Image (cartoon, rainbow, N blue to C red):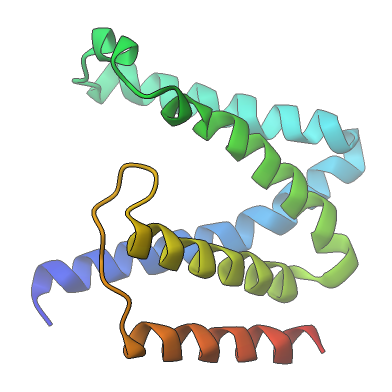
Length: 146
């Protein structure tokens, strides 16, 4: 495995660590200020950080927004739904089960996106390795949910 591949893997693992910490943090916040209020604060805080990053490190081209496909502008809406669902289910099934079902949903959807080339992505052929990996993941999710 190349050094670059290790870096990408490390960043992916870091992302997983942060999500696993974010879910219970969001749940704690909503206990203090309310469910939807917590969702709003989480997303406002994220927007503020993104705004600072755009102002300090951004080098994009805003005029390109008019050429972007309409569906590509829905990521923020999906973010609100993701935060709402995760904040809702964690108190009921726990962080591990919530992360497991989220990852299972992500992996199944990612497999379809890759295989079909959906949402503007390149196609990656379906292989037995990918199918077996998905089956193992789904078995692991089932075991965590029992």
